[in-house]
Structures are given as C-alpha cells and as structure tokens.
Image (cartoon, rainbow, N blue to C red):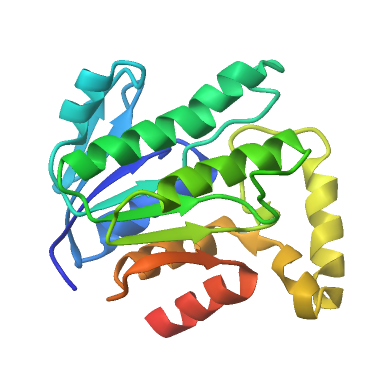
Length: 225
C-alpha cells in the first residue's frame, strides 16, 4: 500500500513527534496534515500544518480535509490539567472521538490510536476507564480498520520532566526481563518503537479492530523490516 494521505493529532507529544518524523521519512506516505492548536516550527515538502480550535466542530471538519488514515497520539496528564477531570476528558476522549467521527464523514478509512495497557471502560481507575471509553467509542465506528496501541511505560526523552519518572523508568527497565507470559504486556517500550508499530499497522491489508500489546507491537516492528 502506497500513496497514503495521512492526518495526525497529538504531534507535539513524545510519541506523536516520532510518528510525524517517521511518516515524513516514509515514501509510502504522499502527504501528512497535522492539526495543531499552536504554530509548529517545521517545514517539509509533504507536510501541511493546520491551526484548529478542536472545540469548533465545523472548523475541525474542514481542517481534517480528505485523506486515508488518521494517527492519534493526543493525550494529557492530570498535572497538565491541574486535576481538572472534565478538561482531561475533553482532551483525551472528546477530541479523539470528534476527530474520528468527522474523519469518517470526510472519507477516511483507518484510525490508528495510541492508548495504554490495562484500559477498561468499567475500571474504577479514572485514567484506565477514560482510555477504555475512548477505545470503545472509536472501535464502534465503521472504519475499515482501527488499530489500537496499548503500551505500558514509555521510554525516551521527554521535553517536560515528570517528577519521579526517571526513577520509575529505571525500575521498569530492571524488572522488564522478569515480566513473562501474561505479564509481558507491562514491559516498558521505547516511544520510537510505538511510533514504528503505528505506522506498520496503518499499512496492513486487514479490516476490523485490532489491539496491540508489547508483544504484538514488537511483532509489527519485526514484520515491517
């Protein structure tokens, strides 16, 4: 599959930036349109940047334009929203679901979503429940294919330092070899690998909803080489 016209949201985050870079370097993609709230300093021949108010649905629909595949790495943290769960939901759930609905209206056939391990729409944990609800809402839409990445701890350099994160990553790396069998899904993974898996999934000639834990993402990466 070649000549893919892609849109992406969440490209200012750790994994989103890597998805954007890999798409721009991949000859299978003819164009990439990024939807951002603020100007992004990057100029590439096949890159189009569109400033958008994600709360303005007519503007958002127009910004999405026409294409084949949507990549979403959008998300926030409780610290970034200062504990505001309603705002957290607006970013993680509403933006993803609204973009998905409008992309369908515009003829997109694939949605590639970065989520998280352990998601469950019935969970008592706010984060896991919200991610699970987002997955369920998008999986229920009539895309030709939906691919959902479910990584555990993400490794790689962040621009924003998170308290205790370096320690947590070191611990995760140390115990990773001990996470076998069903526990393997909790192994930490490099953000660059998640990005590679997302792009590999977008090229698969399959239909339906597909979820990828650590082992499945690594399988995608190996198969794409």
